[in-house]
Length: 113
Length: 434
Image (cartoon, rainbow over all chains, first blue to last red; front, side, top):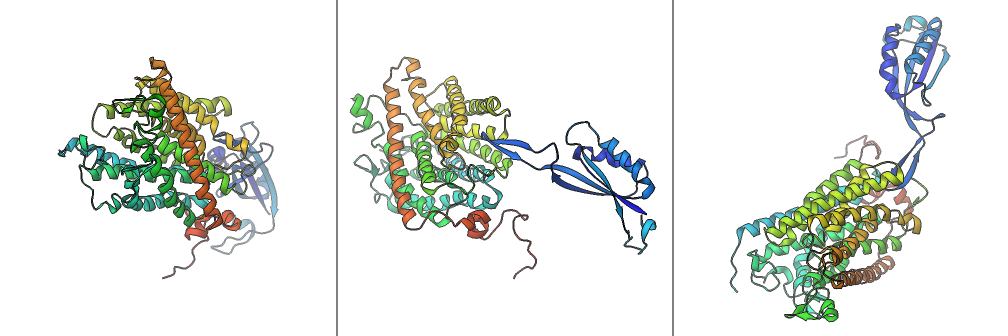
């Protein structure tokens, strides 16, 4: 069986997270630039004295498909590499995946990873 | 009098005219970066439109109304040099004849001032104005506000050192000219107060942008604003040092004064922001640069370099504070033409009364110069304000000023010009139409 590990992290932690995942044996992942907010909320910008609140802050989202038994390790690897200890570090979550297909060969399930 | 060509002076004045013309595209970038991405093209087009309209008008009646034979101290005879077919280098209207500069060089230099003054106004009515109405306004306003003020101040009219002028009437004459000559070296009254008060009147008349004061209307491209400020600073050497009318010591002094006042105003604006808002911003630096350039404009030939630093510091702080007034009083001067040009122009024009090295209060000159400076500033405010109000109301009742709310929200660029500045704003082009 397969799990999808999704992490939303600080953009500046991406390189470290990528290297750590590689070292842990993860061979593929998807990265996207996203924006949002959690407890960090947004920030304010000031233009000629007029203050604007920007609600959404830029984040990076990583999606990794893993074998069931690796989900815990991969999650820990991401958390360790992405952590700065400050508000805004992000979230990691794991979901079950019904099926995975490798487009090139048509393989299904664990073999497609 | 025979005309003797001076190639050095002529070369410098040709260069200056080109430098001042470059300032208007500079305004286009300065303003364009400050509006939202959906109306940047319209903002820049208002500057380019002013170049087109005023450039043509200048050769027909613009020059004549500015420097032709005086009518009532208010404007020159519009038909005197209509089309410029009849002008010669020795005409009395060629104020640079004695410097050996041909009349067409003088006219070219002056035309560029008329152009930028109109373009400056456009910043207060960003994002919401009909382009056609703007072009018509440009033609009428330059005719009844700019040319008369240029004549009054520089063409021997009511605000000049003429024996029939305001200053001569108050403080008398010496050798046939006013004892206390009003000082407006390069256009504090004619250009900046004139454009600033017009911008205020139009902003009030046309009304606020949808979302003013409630939604973020943040600048879409601050690097454009920085680029515009840089072009303006560069072009301003033609504006101020060129206003010496020759390649001489006054031009050198004006160059130096222009630079140090601008440096001081930029730093003063940044310091004001740092104290008030917590950050010294790049938009603040660009704004401070323009505030300093504006304030030193009337004073560039009359001050010492140290006096110029003082004018710059005062203008930087005052303008940085003045840009907040629109929120307090609820008028949408979108890009702060009032806060920068009106306040900066008034600051420079009035401070000459204190800092002029020959007649200023601080240099033992008494208060006469100060009184004259305050009066010419007030006359410029009242004259331009009233004239703009009348033109604005007539256009409001006829052509109309505002685009529809739908167009304003969707963006003036797409609706009025049929373009979008950035790919991400327009719908993706799926097929190429031949």
